[in-house]
Structure formats: C-alpha cells, structure tokens
Length: 220
Image (tube, rainbow, N blue to C red; front, side):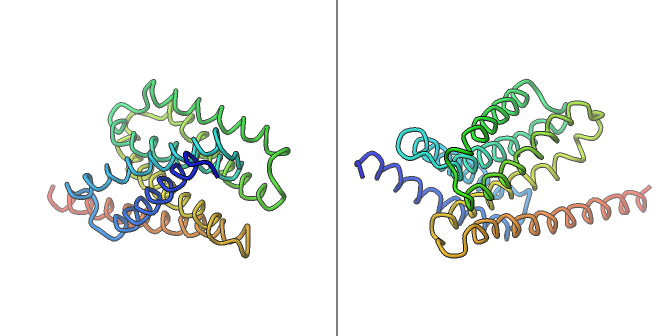
C-alpha cells in the first residue's frame, strides 16, 4: 500500500474516531449552551476532515460504493443540518439549493455505478443509504414552498435529524470496516439505532415546546 494512502487512512481513522466520540459525548450533554456550540463546531470540522479523507480514498485509491454513498450522506447531512441554524428565519437560500443539487448529482452517479461495483450485500447498504439521502433531498426540495413561519419551528427538528443522522452514518461506516461478520446487518444496525435516537430527541423537543406554550398561556 503506497504511503499517501496509508497517511490518508490513518488520518481518516483518527479523525473519525474523534468525531464519533465527540458526537456521542454531545448526545449526553446539555444542548443550546455556549459549550455545546463550541463542541458542535469542533464536531463539524472533524466530520468535514473525515469526509475529505473518505472522498480522497474513493477518488484516488480504492473506490467502494458503500463508502462513497456514506461519504455523500454524512457530508450533506452535516452541512445541511448546520445550515438550519442560519435558515430558521428566512428559509433556504441559494447555497442550500446548490448543496441539494450537488448531493442529488452525486447520489445519481453512485446509483449508475452500483450495478458494476457492488456485491449483493453491499448493494443492500448502498440502496438503503441512497434511500435515506433521497428522503432528505425530497424534504429539502419541498421546504422551499413552506410558509415562512414554519421555519422557526421546524429548524430544530431538522438540526436534530441531520446531525444525528450524520453521526450514526459514520458509525455505520465504522461498523462496515471493523465488523466483518454479520454483514450487512451489522452495518445497518447503527442506522436503526440512529432513528430510535432521533425519535427520542424529537419527542423531547416537542415536549419542551409544549411546556413553553403552557407557561406562556399561564403568564398571559
């Protein structure tokens, strides 16, 4: 294995481990605090480096459709989830539309190559990941037609879904590399766990909003 590839792999593994560890730590700590925002920015930078090294690995050294689609999925969910903080007032902007279009093109290219590059077990993971990407892209396309008042409510749910989904997609990629037995189910399990976690945080956010509305009613 050439030295540049070894350096790329080592960087990918180290930053991926750090990003996953920090992401799991953020799940267990208070949200919305200055510390959460600082750590969230660090998580974003680590994840960007993970995606950059994964993209280099796929483009220059060893293309694997499973990791190609997970790279696109993690990167899009990260950037789109981060952008929700800045679109909560006026809604999506030109940069958001450009990101959606690029993710759609990348997903389409991976799908076109799938029949030549993926085994049966790999195809299950690739298609499920592409399905997850398609669902997000459909939603992100539809939100351009949402009434402006919706953005102030929905952005938190988008933020939760997309950032948690990017974390658990990295876990899925790690499972694909480390757990050779029981594929593809060991690789799909983190995605299922991620959906359960997202549902719990959505329910928590909804209950917090209901409590705030109740307090406002009592105050008026």
